[in-house]
Image (cartoon, rainbow, N blue to C red):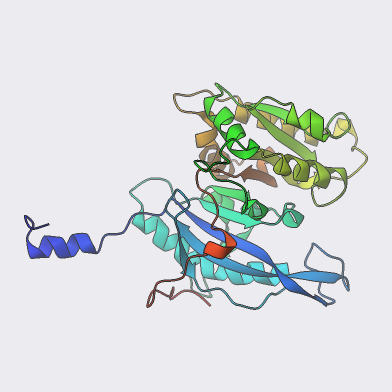
Length: 323
């Protein structure tokens, strides 16, 4: 530092690392209330859970910085989502500007298991903070992945619990020459806990059923509970029983996923998966089987901030685009 001119030291002191990702978290608030609003996850007039949200910048290895001061009161999920997406545009634009020329910053959306049916990559958001700004599909603009907010208490890589299934299966995905899809429920009955536990570490669970309830919901919750870091399913998955096979939608989806996971390259295939899915979504014409696709991608090397360790926003750094 003594060898540098004062002007250069001043410039260096203002540099900040480029974010690895932007994280949008939704947590269930402790209160419930009865409303007649139907947000797509509960029927009209049903008791709905309330949610709070937060937006953070991630720099890797579990280092997070609060980017937008969230509203303290819980609201229905549809309203929380609209509030968060409005605030998110400015954070993503700033994160993109801070990165070297290349791909945009990925967006990670952390949800509780009850909301795993949300089509996070299909959400539309304003392209900037202006009310008249056009909306675009976020999954076409950048890599978007779903994370499990209920894994906060899981051991992180490097802890004494590093041998837990989440970390072990991630290491298996890194070392696998190619990723292997395993159908969670089709064409047979859903895989049980013992069957899932016995799967090789290089496998990726895949599901075309509705994951918001029923056997499809049980299947993805079971896979998450057993530590699978990566899975793919459809936000618009079919119900039960299985639809007419002649329709072909399920086989088109599974064929597309198989082709995606079979890619071989110089680097571990799992590391490039979010970017490759984004390229498919952003392509012209867009691959039809990617509509409604949810990429569950929970990297244990970059754990979510634990509830008791939530970072505080630095004084004077409140995002001007927050609302």
